[in-house]
Image 1: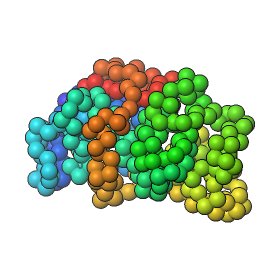
Image 2: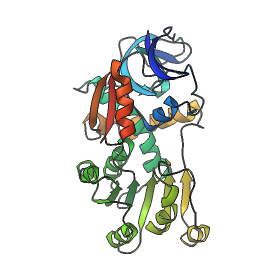
Image 3: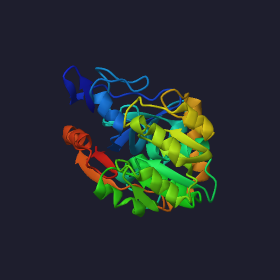
Image 4: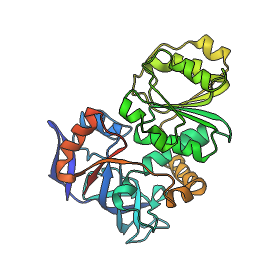
Length: 323
């Protein structure tokens, strides 16, 4: 089968053996796959969890139809249209854990739309609802809100009854579109007054919850923008892995600071997160209330161009490979 594989001189499309479904896996004929930030690092040889290095088939998220079912896989059958995490999604066929699979709604959702959703749904339901413990009427700030997962976070926050959702982006054109996906206020964190504007919007208290995909140099400003006994959930570190942290301010404001990642979770924990999405917000997925914009679709043969497009960091929403 054709696959986009990392070699010694970078990734390229090559022929590799088709994988076989074992245990609780299903084999999926991939019809569409999405790029995520982790894919950029892996294409440069960096590991992401247990995956990475030369010989790795890139891609981690996609949609297609089940063509084979492992002997212990439950609830799946050949012919099911599914979306979810696929180890090596940038290929004609990939393996999906049956416990992490979402059956694509039987409405008009196509494979390209479906491929945009799994990572964002799991990541941000966990960050906003489970780790973030958002309650109706509370206020939320999403750092890095114009990314695919950020746009999902704003929508989930609104769906769960947030009274105020603030989104940030340093790009003016993307910031202007955040209202389409649930943001009541859009801010540029390069402006020195951005924390003051958060405090002004919350009557001086700060927000109940920050979902932070940036961190780095923003760590202390986030503390200032969070209310006493508020929560910060650190999801990503696009602005840097390290930064100054005012431990006294953290203590004075009695902030609950939570770090999350899927890289160190067990398969059972990730299955539980998937189940929580299905039990809590799946109706909103089926109805189309939770959705993500597709910035651009590339044919699989132009995978290099898709990576270049993401590297340029001018996209709004998801970048899709049509397989």
